[in-house]
Length: 81
Image (cartoon, rainbow, N blue to C red):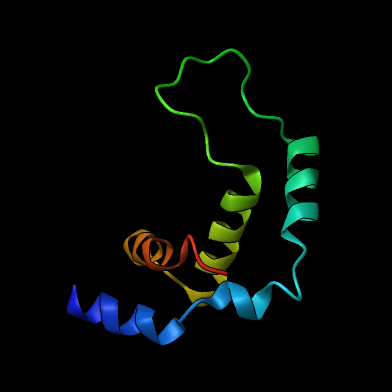
């Protein structure tokens, strides 16, 4: 976990840097328009908002983060900003 922590801490909160360039709300609306979610499925918890999933995917691609690193990045920054 040490290497993941060190590398991901170096990133800080990259959303602060990229939000002026990417309109995540507009991106989420377009995704929802073109790919509506499943209807009538039984889930034990609600799905994440499309906007959240969009920024997760963008961060993973821009910073080449693995699922594990993205999970850590999200855990330290999800309620900031």
